Image 1: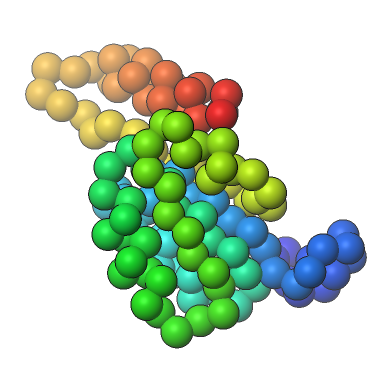
Image 2 (image 1 turned 90 degrees about the vertical axis):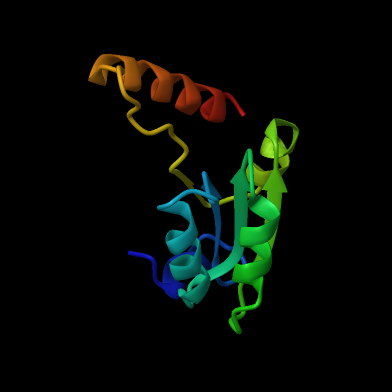
Length: 118
């Protein structure tokens, strides 16, 4: 339950700190918008390896109380994850011609491993 009472119970200031990894992708962009609109989200970190500044600028113009910060590139991953209550991993590559499902799984598993090691 993402209610305010859970935030207060753990002793933190009200609101969840959320990081979206893969924020510039086709799912990451609309999810970033929805999280920015969620009243229980106080801090929103948007991370990707491309196009993060544009997504961050667009999302930050929404008139809500959540503070939005963008992080671009592998060297910013640690900073994007620091202090977060919830991390949502959307980063992946799409199925390309000639790829099997096993190939796709292995590529995406490597991406998730890299992000989890961050």
